[in-house]
Image (cartoon, rainbow, N blue to C red; front, side, top):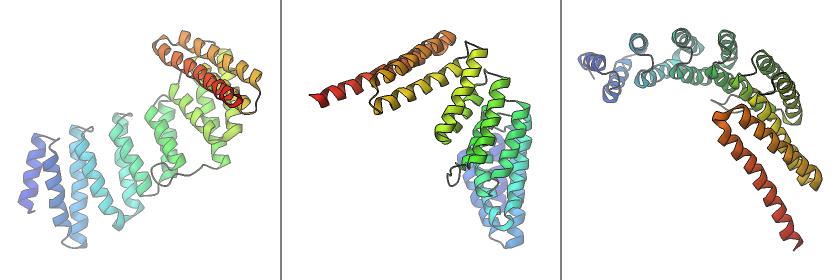
Length: 290
């Protein structure tokens, strides 16, 4: 665990940045150096952060360097608190300026948001990234995780937060009806918002489908709404209404398949799944009557 052994890991990693054993031994060396007192610990850990930054310049998609940096930043967390988190956000922001969809950087930011309680900062950052590229699905995912605190303790966003986020998603859907990431975000928020969210999504989808009849994302949202109405009607014993809504869903899924031939098998499956569900309900009722 000497300084010589640490230098040896540097040489090995420069030869092969994916050498897991070299990274593992390096971390043991860092831990040994950090055990020499508070000043030695801070110096050793900060030096390791600089080392990971140098490695990122060579290959910012190296799993091992991100795993190593998380260990180092976690060790600094107790001593520096939120200041350590600010350093991690600055580093990942710099990486994402070069590659806005670097999965490793986004995953590290998600960890840092939870470890340093920086969810509000993550919402602000994801908003800026979406302004630059509204189809950055990684930014949408990070925003959703920050909103629901998915990386820490999951929680239900407040009605005010859901309203704000639905408005954001609706604006992006209106600006670009083909933005699948925005549609996915809107559908998820609608699910969190209950009946009112579902009604609002249906209005947005109807407007989008009217403006662009071949918009498969809007049609799919409408089809799912029709499926939900069919299930509700079935549960209420309204067989005619249930069949009408189920037929509407099948028709909408057929339109989805025509609008998006690449995913036609998926939409055909969704239509069949709805028909199978209806058949199972009818079979159950017949067995009950028998």
